Image 1 (tube, helix red, strand yellow):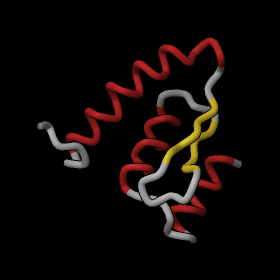
Image 2: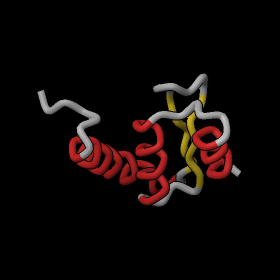
Image 3: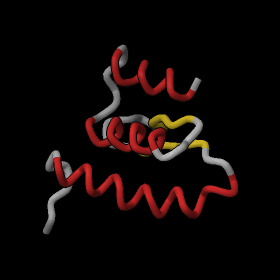
Length: 79
């Protein structure tokens, strides 16, 4: 349901952003059971469901993966 909601926010309501789409996609790729934007969108926040025993590893890997991908598409400035 969370994943479908993110797709709906992105495609139907157009209230997501490139950064939020990348972040939620990366969260799911790293094992999140669900991930979607929260709040008003347009650069807001995300919430992801992650198994309790995977939280620390998930956060560590998310920081690495998201910024590596964001730098490739020039979302995040290296400076």
